[in-house]
Image (cartoon, rainbow, N blue to C red; front, side, top):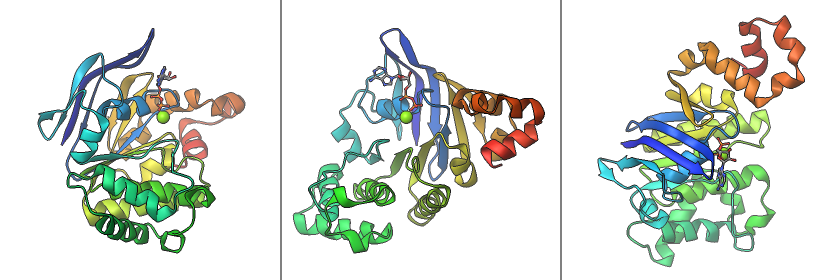
Length: 264
Ligand code: ADP
Ligand code: MG
């Protein structure tokens, strides 16, 4: 469905993505993981037209979309959420979602239609009670759910979620992650989920792609990725958690490390 082929993206001297090929298959939930700074958000920005890559092309259903503007790409059916949500704080929740419906759909709906679409998705993400409050009064979980409703209301065929569960506590995290899985299954929307919290992605993804310092480190089924020593090493070392618990790594074997740090 999507192929980002041989993508290279530089920021000055820094190579954020170095010849990375990422393929997304129709109907799957692909987990895109990697330590902070590994290039995950940059990949989303390249796919959605926020950045133009120095090398490589992006194909969506066989069509070359490299360098198209973000508003064109969203209308073609690729929606995204932002790592740092930027809601219109003084608009109400339903108005925020309506604005996404009006901006992001190929056929621009009337205000009334946009409201219907927004209400449907707000009910789906269980924010119906909050539709008329100002977005800025939402708590962090509710903001994430509103982001999700905004993305869905653009009628996506491909959904890119950037650290949707970052900042949530473990039970909130699982709640949102399970909601995403349910939406993918029920609505059949192909989804790429970026997280640096490995556990969240491991439990729900069909396939996992690991970025590390701008290159592909591994790709495979969650079980394979979890067993891959180079992933576990790179991941744990880079996240710095081992820096805090350096002694722990000496004491524990890989199995224990995985259990203790990754919950798998
Ligand atoms: P991730 O989302 O995996 O944490 P990013 O894709 O945000 O990583 O960043 C990858 C690298 O590119 C980082 O070193 C980051 O500092 C750098 N980077 C990202 N965006 C920019 C930008 N707009 N300008 C300069 N450097 C950037
Ligand atoms: Mg990021």
